[in-house]
Length: 439
Image 1 (cartoon, rainbow, N blue to C red):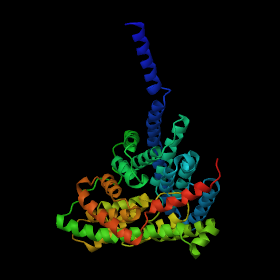
Image 2: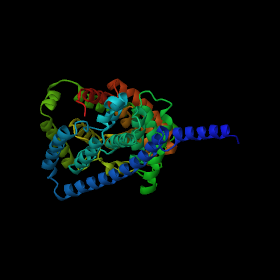
Image 3: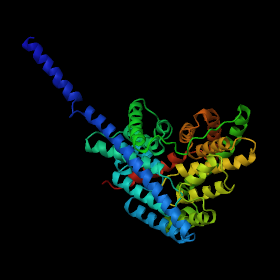
Image 4: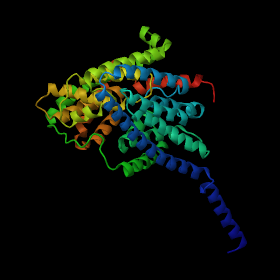
């Protein structure tokens, strides 16, 4: 080979190394995505186990001293609200609105809303909420900390932070939290990305698959609520799905409207909550404590009664409204914690009410239809609702009736609440992040 040919070949090799080698932006971007997704899977798994332990600890406490939550829960709410406002003002609530807001202006405010320190405090405060009986879930906080982990890894490797990174992190968090990879992808499309861009596809799918593999490898191939053999004849499924969709959508839409009103409207209650946030949180804790002590079913995520209903068991008909009020009081209190799992439990209770209306139909199937309808009414993401419930119950053969109920519920919920809950709440975080001083 001539000297000219060798020089030309070496230039190509050096150019290829610069473009794809260990110091290149492309290599660092891929490393940040894959390494971050592994960390997301590990963090979601550790958070899930810690949340379960916190819930079990409170349940044990409540069984030993049934009246203690009347004092512990209001004081716990007040303390958590004070810590949140003092040390982590962007950690309040679910975590999903923060990620949605961060995707709007990732370079300007993304670092504030998906800051790793804030996310870690949010995890600790969510666990504290479960320790005092708050009606919260870990899924929303998992979304925020997952986005924060990916953002921090990108920062360490000096990779520019883009909206697609936070969308991918949030989607990976949902996938790892529930062991539902398809739900993570659909959640990214319906909720986190207002305009889903083609370039996000590979990021989202890669992050979801890697974080899901980590969770699956360490926790095993589990189904969140257990496998449910749901089945209804076609005619019955259409009737029940229609009733469930209308009533569940209206109920879920009412929850969203009340939660948004508490965050954005002006009246005596909201004026009091803004003027005296710690006292208001204590009042919300008192409501949660009173309902919990009277029912014994509404603490935490209410996973046990929800699973009992899904698998064909019986619970009191008042479980749904009791869980509705308990979750709403927790949500508007301002303490950190998600509404995914509590809303699924409320939906199961709503399905229990439907089962009373359709006693001749299979109980598990009716409960699942009520569950998907109510959950869709709250979050207004019908595809995500169907996939989450089908993946967490193993009822993939029942997806068509679930989709019918979810689509009807989405339309019904719009009649009650025009704005989607997470997107409405994200505006508040967006405005606060813009107004916050840098650093």
